[in-house]
Amino acid sequence: MADAETVQIGEHGLEGYLVRPGASGAMVLFAHGSGSSRHSRRNAYVAAELQAAGFGTLLFDLLTSEEASDRRQVFNIELLGARMLEAMTWLEQDAGLARAPLGLFGASTGAAAALVAAAERPERVGAVVSRGGRPDLASAALRDVRCPSLFVVGGGDTTVIDLNRSALEKLTCTKRLEIVPRATHLFEEPGALERVVALASDWFRTYLATATA
Image 1 (cartoon, rainbow, N blue to C red):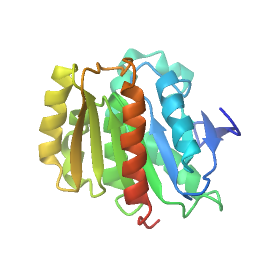
Image 2 (tube, one colour):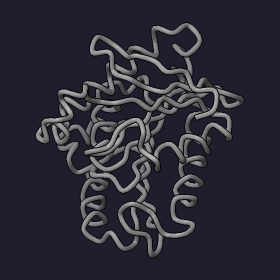
Image 3 (cartoon, rainbow, N blue to C red):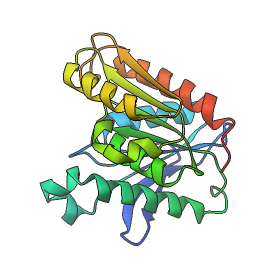
Image 4 (cartoon, rainbow, N blue to C red):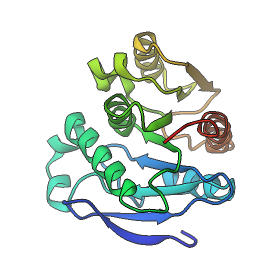
């Protein structure tokens, strides 16, 4: 990842890759899905494209290596949400990033973690994007999300579409569901992930431009 700093985050020393903001001045914090890590190929691609659009990015491991070996922890949304909050606090301790508008990008179970963090820190999070996410796992936190939230789901991922629609109904903020035709859960089809990037870039560009830290 070009110009990335290898960092250790918070009291748990979570490992991550930080790229500071360019022209947009805004940061996007990534939450990967179950069984994945900061090395996620798909999230790395999305991050690189957002960097090219002027956004800073932080990809990091939400769990320590010991925690990740316990399959139950990768679905512990309360813990994953707490780690997102830990990373947000870490960013605020950096003078150059403390006041940068902040967006959250979550994939799979990471989308639920992002929404939990957004609900906990409504004054800090300016926008959320979910890719093939499980926002339904954020449960009661959904009613407390205040920032504009975009859910992107593949047209072939029918079960997850229904779960996203159910979660969307519980949100009272600005919200949208985008279905990428013929794409499946991992958006591996030609052009599918590029469509995710275009949607996420537009969403962050629109809502982080006016967000206040």
